[in-house]
Amino acid sequence: PDFQLTAKRLKEMGQEKLTREERKRRNRALDGIGVKSFNKFLDEQGVPHIARKPTEVFQINVGLYCNQACSHCHVESSPRRKKEQMNHETAKRCIELIKSSPSVKTVDITGGAPELNEEFRFLAKEARALGKEVIDRCNLTVLSEPGQEDLAEFLAENKIHVIASLPCYGADNVDLQRGNGVFERSIMGLLKLNELGYGAEGSGLQLDLVYNPIGPFLPPEQSALEAKYKEELAAEFGIQFNSLFTITNMPIKRYADFLYKRGELQDYMELLVRNFNPSACDTAMCTTYVSVDYDGNIYDCDFNQQLAMKLKNRSSTPITVHDILSTSDIMEKKIMTSNHCFGCVSGMGSSCQGATV
Image (cartoon, rainbow, N blue to C red; front, side, top):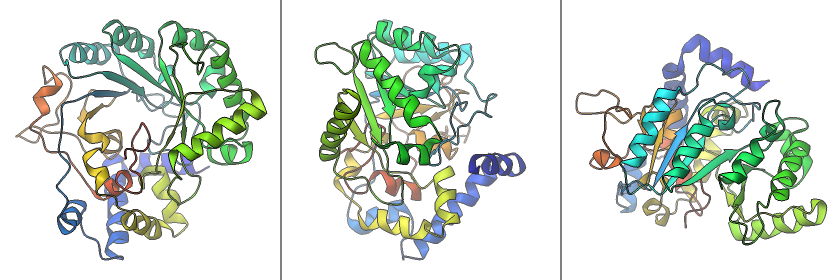
């Protein structure tokens, strides 16, 4: 499988060298269509550079271990990545930082399969105790993993907002992207959440689904696709949910490898540039997000995290959760951009919570 080949290259080359090679490929793709850097492109379009606002979403990537290995995964998670996991000290410091950052409204816990990290339930309960909305980025199949029999009940009892991946309402497309049997287990997971009240009006249990394209194209208009998802899932399985988020596949990591091997990377980058939407720059998720990795390093977004684009102090030392007193301490830091950023400002805009415009 592709994820095993990627894991082998990661071990041989190291993350930094692999990321540098990937960035060069995107640069060559952009050179082929006459586009230079992201910020220079904004200058040519007369669009202001993306600027930081007070942090509203504190996103925590608790580790890269996952029970799946999806072809589109920008994190390159897999069942093999058991060592890259957040420890209790870092998790505790994240909670302290959230507590001292009044602008933070939402704690977004992701991975990997975040629920398989030992600190997931600690983070979720502590953040809820602070009155924050807590999001669990759930792949649904984790709900039927051994040892997770009570996970759905935990999520419901703590009123955790579940954002679940389901790239299609049909089995063939889901299994193609996420692995054999994933669609059936995903449906089982959704039905279990529905039984507990998730997705029901007035229950206070928010269940949203995520769609991302299975090929090198932009997602369709969000509201129209949401209506189709609701119609199909209700008719076929009696499933209900609140909202659908459409997310553009970012040309990084495993998906970038997929495009490169098929000779489609330049075409995809051209598609993103051609559909540039200046309105999406002001609402890009990096304006109000911070992203923290399992070691406590701080980034502008989850995508920058996977490209090792760490926020740094004046001496070029990475900034961690142990180095700041609140998220307001990074307000003066410029948002780090690169050529992958075209993915977030193309079409209707894209973020971890769907379209942005």
